[in-house]
Length: 509
Image (cartoon, rainbow, N blue to C red):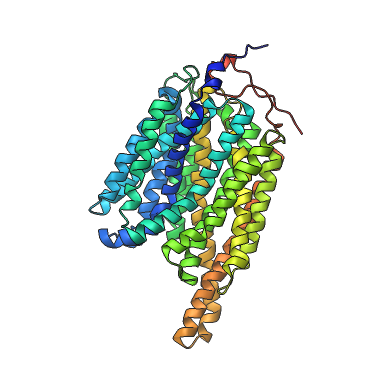
């Protein structure tokens, strides 16, 4: 029987809960940065003279660099040390944010956003893998991942609130500058408090062909979906990007199979439980990101809410996520198998999404949108928590960084697909509605009403797709994830070398 590594010092370290504060703070900064700039974009575009055609690049530059470099960032964390990578990522993110806030033109802004994405790709996998190697006790791990899951799920909505406040009462530049105190506090705190186990690093040579193929493949995939939103799915450039991405990613898989020290060891993704997490989580994020976009536009354009009021309108979802993650998920995670939290969680979120298919111009916020958001938050919070934990459970300590990067990659790619796919569906439904009803609107007031009704019809059509995607997420989680409840077994990242690690037994239910 393999020896159980000595982890007493790590488990007894009173600083681990302080470490969680700084890790969670960094994660919040990265997640909210994906949405905080959305609300500030119209003001920034006007100030910097960014054309309508190029404004999407303020969002896309961040998503491309982040999504494309995540696997590389995860491998760097395994090779260089998670704590060092984490602190470096935070310092770089702060510098890139300062550059974005001080931007004097389009090129400087886009460069700053790409740099933010690149440093985010360093620190996000390092944050999750630090959590995986710091919390080794099953019950403590459940609490830690509950907090982390709530932040990972609710950070986007927090970004909308903060973005609304900063844009309305200060200036769009503060949506960048606000990252600097976050990053500095998290970096100093992590440097002083975080204790990374000495063992478990992966010091094998860097897989350069794997880095190039995965980065180019993921960038082409994310850009393909982004381009589809504006240029259309049948556009030659869009099709070329998807074909190119497919070829590059197939070559990447072949390379990983053949090389001695792969960037992404295939054992990380071929495990049915981790594969089930990456797939179901990526699909669920497709539904969530589309919803953020539609609800923001619905509340501001159709209901006439201010940016701040729009941000606060997302509060029920944040509350639901916190309750789902820290109360339901954490309390049940050590008692029931993960699939019995994830599948019902995604279905609960699907019921919330189903309510939103009933949106009309005059829909009551309290009567429909609020309860729908609560269900969405509760469901996603309950499902995210075991998903985040399971994604790094049972991996060799040397693979913790790249396994963490795969969680972030599935979320980033899911977010890009969700925004493009659901937006395209909504736009098509709106166009069809306007074609059928525009002729009957003869007065300006009637024309405006038809336009608003067309927008709402488009949102409802796209939300129906989101309901189906969440149902598919639930089915994948239930069928593929078959590990039992976390017991007293040792977990990955406990500080042992890979050969000495005690694996989590997979118990089929």
